[in-house]
Image 1 (spheres, rainbow, N blue to C red):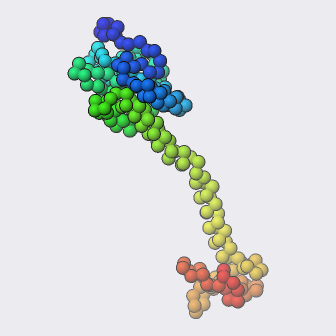
Image 2 (tube, rainbow, N blue to C red):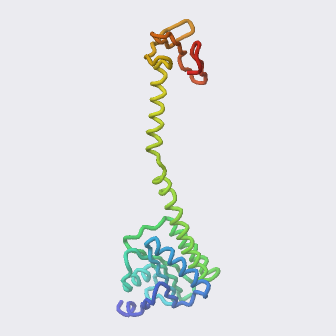
Image 3 (cartoon, rainbow, N blue to C red):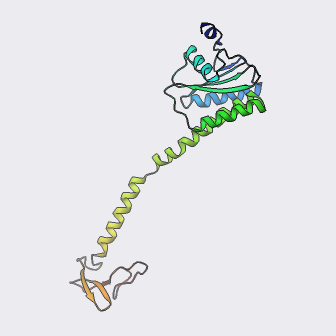
Amino acid sequence: MALAQALLPLQVGPINDYGQTLEAEDRGKLLGYIAALEAQNIQLVYLASWRDPFSDPKRYAAEVFRAWALSERTLLLVFVRDENRRWHVAIQTGSALALPEKVEELRKKAETEANRMRPGYAAVHFVSGLLAALSEAQRPQAATKNFPWKPILLGGVGLFLLFLFARRICPRCGRPLRRVRSVSGIIWVCPRCRYTRAGLRWGRWPGGRGDLLP
């Protein structure tokens, strides 16, 4: 165990490419994505290595995370190659970091791309996909938070109540209308000026006798 711990690499910064996986273009893109994540209070640390003293990528990532004393807002992305020259991708995050569920799908895709194409390409695409997933996860919350549902709902209820109230008031003299049963059905009559309004029927907007539309 002590020997395995001693074989862990040293951190030199956010990008620790001991496995020589990144081309110059890859490194530039990765640094840009790392800066974009930092703007969201997420620290990404990249490690690529040809040696895993534990022969277990998940444990290797956990031991490196602990040995480097990374913060609780850190995502450690590890690309490590086994004795058969096959690349594995592991992720270790701090306890204060909550990532979208899509991250596991991105990790599996990165592992496939690392072996079919090259690790540097896979690493850049993983971080790009992570940024997209974070943006997608935040978009519905922002829309729900910013949309003024409560004022619109209260305003709609208020207009409906005002409409019902207006239906019961004479538009000529302001007196309350009285409900009267007639041959043609229920009508509303003003006891003062005799203004008459037919009962409201959905789909029809009859006018009052000798008056405009109600």
